[in-house]
Structure formats: C-alpha cells, structure tokens
Length: 131
Image 1 (cartoon, helix red, strand yellow):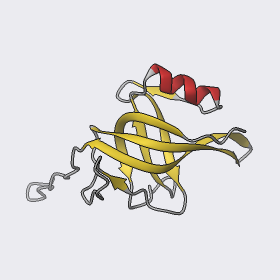
Image 2: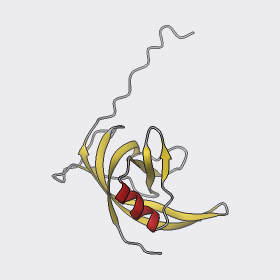
Image 3: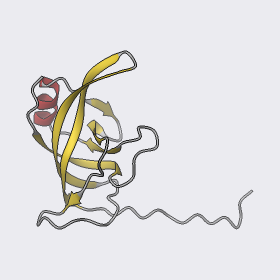
C-alpha cells in the first residue's frame, strides 16, 4: 500500500484532539465537505469516503496514541477547543487495518493547521426546572 502523505483541506467536526473519543478510544477529527479532488485522491488509495447530509463527503482522521496538536497558520499552538464549523488543513497518512474480520485503509493524522477557528463552548444546562 502506498503510504504517501496527503494535505486535505476540510471543515472540521467532532474534534477530539486532546481527549480520546469514548466510542473509538482514539484521538480523532472528522474532515468534512471534502472537495472532489480530495475524494478522488482518498479513494485512489483505498480510503472509504463516507457521505452524510450534515457533513457532506467526509473521513475520520485518527491518532491512536498521541493527542492531535492543532496550530494556527503562523505555527502557534491553539489551546481552545476546536468546534464544529472550524476549517483547516490536515496532513494525513493512510494505514492498512484489520479488525473484527474487516480490513481496509484508515486515515492517520500527523498535523492539523486550523485556518478558521470556531471555538467550542458548551451551553450550561439549567437544572432548576427539570421534570
């Protein structure tokens, strides 16, 4: 399998950059609304590009052992939580996997440059009137 790194520009959603995702146990971010060129390049190396109404064509880039560090275009670390609607450029590297009888090509992530930051700020929940 070719292990060439790719630069993918995408909308960022469901960014678990410094805390593993509870379902996968990995650090991850969805790279959404991919361009036709990005879709073609990913499919040519065997990556399954998915499509959902709210994400367009997307892949989930993952890191098993290390947090994903996000930087701005000047190279400064981003300490804020990266929220849905952010935009960035991800340096990704495909990897082959076999799990539970399935095999395929996953998407690892080596670098994330955030070009438009929408900070994630969860709304506080008012519990005073809970039924």
